[in-house]
Image (cartoon, rainbow, N blue to C red; front, side, top):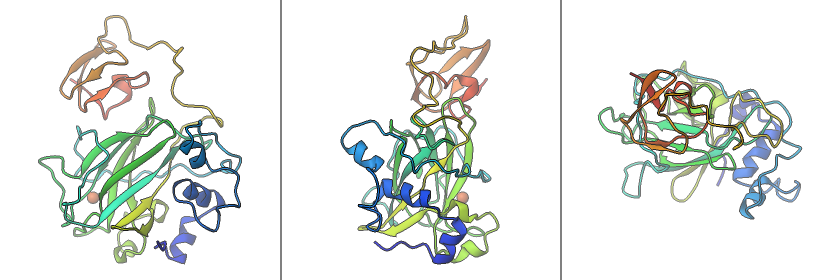
Length: 280
Ligand SMILES: [Fe+2]
């Protein structure tokens, strides 16, 4: 269970006390257990609401964007598992949280992952190693996949688009520590290194996203239920409706086609979520 970040990588990541504490939310570090107030994960285990704790108050910069690259495909399946026991490659479980600028965990954040297979190839015909999911009420996500293979010109990486409701899309990439090509890949950025450890089987990785979403501790960026859906007169889009990929709605006088099957909610009106709706 050794961490695979080298000291230089940890230094270059600017690992702060907050970073370590956030890591402890996902996988408690023996050094830290017993030295902290109740961890958020403890509250989660008991079903209590996740309360931002005082240590989550320093200022992390928002997760940086990176290029999309040539292999993104819209309309990925809704799923958290991209690989099974029979899938060639090293099993990898990636988990983490999505926070706003004030360290508030963000629920219902869309995460759309895509990556290469064990041989470094992307499925540009189907949706192998492509899938989207949403953070839960505690702002957490988990992806079950494999360690992506290498392909020419790049170091090892996972692509992701992250979008809080009614907010812009963050497109970025995640990296593995200790990869020889990290030093030669001009796109690589150490601020996007995951924490990776050896597990049985395979690897476990953690990464917490920080989105440019304002808010105070305990606040949610999602509109409260008292906010009425902003469906304009004459539009057919409705919050709470499950739309299949290919379905069409009108909103604000325009027609949109659904790119990914999902259940609509306030904040996901078609103009706000280009990952879900395309204007036709
Ligand atoms: Fe790629």
